[in-house]
Length: 319
Image (tube, rainbow, N blue to C red; front, side):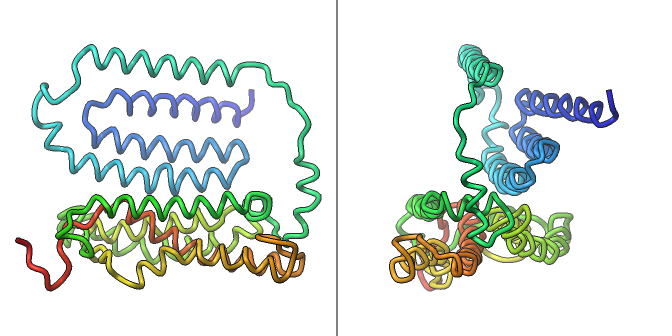
């Protein structure tokens, strides 16, 4: 057994231990912190499986944005945890939940351990034609060439999710701003991080988005990192969440899907149909779409975490 094998076994044990601790934690905020640590460890697992694109996505979305969402929810629901034992589910509910988890775990284990009959694969044929996209990263090439329609619809789902969150606002608050996520002191540790990390995070996010054409990375990973930086400064109270009625905010939200539709429609003029891009145009159009998708992702993810507007627009008095 080599040193690498020992490290892999140790990593697997730590991942399982953190997962178990996260499930067993009785405090919701502690469980959310455990979830963040679990996501970061999974990123290392994906790196060991030679899937850097998935590792970046796990770190940015699974641990970063989702972790912030869970911690924010835990803070808002902290009064429930402090309400006493009566606020927690009864023994019957917990036993039923444990049994359901065991059934799901057993089913997943059976699927994973079952023998796999590998049928015909289109991977060689797909790899043969990816060169026509001009992209060096096969993951980005597949998402923007063979699965371009799915990728475009995913961005539309994000917009629909933001609209759904905004629709939860009270009529008097429509067009206003969401309340602050925290009342952190201006000289606290969170405020210090909110001043130090965003410049670095913005540069790294743009870099990850840009190199995604040829190396691990891409619009979603880069946009998620930019979204995390935006959430950090809002949570620290350094800036306020943008007003829902802001015109520039709405333009940024729809910029990615709109550019995707425009580039797809351009296929009717320069090629055979929608999202059909000739060899000489493919890379330039893909990079243009990716650039605007970064903006939309960086705007929509924080809005989903911040929640619906809670304060009326400026100039409107609250009854």
